[in-house]
Image 1 (cartoon, helix red, strand yellow):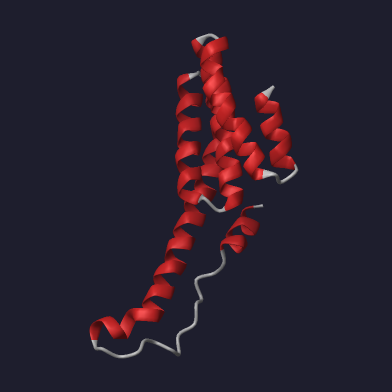
Image 2 (cartoon, helix red, strand yellow; image 1 turned 90 degrees about the vertical axis):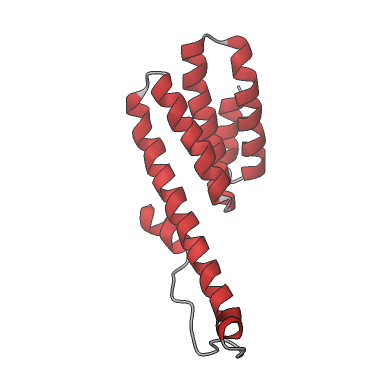
Length: 140
């Protein structure tokens, strides 16, 4: 039931509720199912959790959740399910990389020359690294 609730919340863009339901599903799965079944369901739970985190912009945590999903899927004997997980994981990695590049450019812009020569910074530079939302739209 919690997996279904997490999926519904994801579709309604209520990411915090989706995260909560997915976390609860992960915790409860060990209690009620066989190991193989639990791994398959945990894979789904981590996938939904990672998807919600990705939508919220928590890219590093989303990558960790999606990697757990991939691991559970492989151990649970669900290789066909891994393609969707891998695709979402690649997207999370791209978004994380883009976010870090933008942060580095902003830092360099603010403190670049001041750190090396005591100057004020590169006031003429623009941020041309693209937007994380643009990366997400290109994937869709």
